Image (cartoon, rainbow, N blue to C red):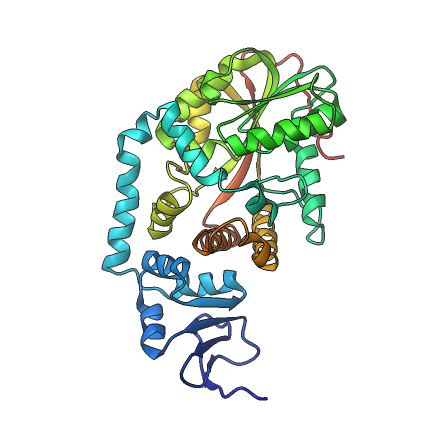
Length: 396
């Protein structure tokens, strides 16, 4: 049966469909629609076109309307066609004022743990529904776009370990170790003695089970603790997808803590999301602060390098993996949609829709250059005698 369409032009050049409950569907543009908005009536569709970004996001996670097809394209359409009016201005101001709260300058371990558990302790099964088999929740490394998510995440683990020049009997620390994939890889493939720390109880329990399953209890340990309470000295340290939770105003103390844990001839790799220079908090920031990552903040590259330098670090290598994170987020969105029924066994519908929207919005943000992902390799400035002279050892 041929659908009854009314054809109109689309704003961003991508055809899309509007499906009403009580009247024929509307096709904007020519060709097959990239996505469809499912709305009650014309009034709701008109509201969807003119509404601010924050209100639209909240309405979506409530289930007031739906999106079928390429949700990333739908979010980009809404973002590009929205005129930033008064409501977007107030949402942006609310997001910009949030970092001025006391927590942005000083965050207790209790508050840090609460923020982390809000996001990560939903359910391991929820994350299993869209992550790879190793449960890696950070940017993958695609040797080519056709790589599977598992292949790309495995390549990312090796990319980090090679950058750190990880060797047998190195003592390695993974700050914010997630579900334990990197510490296990460091011990299994590179022979390191590995420690990890996380504030997530679910991650800690999962990692302990993984370590026992691999019979690595004598080489790998994961601790449920704040990174600020870690003691000891380590040859190599990685922080992967963690420092976004630290906050812009606390970066100096963060780098000073890492500096104090690192051996004089050691290496530190910081892997995290960074905002382009001049980028301001907007409605999407408010959504993330309230619904996804309470306490999270993004810094600019210049700020990160400045604070690392003030702590005593020398920058050895900087690599932007933005295209890799765009691909990673797309894969997560695809898996989350494919496994929606399974996911909804472990999370309520609003949580599922929140994660779907946040991952799709992240994919769009990395694709358009609104956010970056940098790996920054550092060492203590005063020690250089053991340093590699080229990067050949990284790219094998």
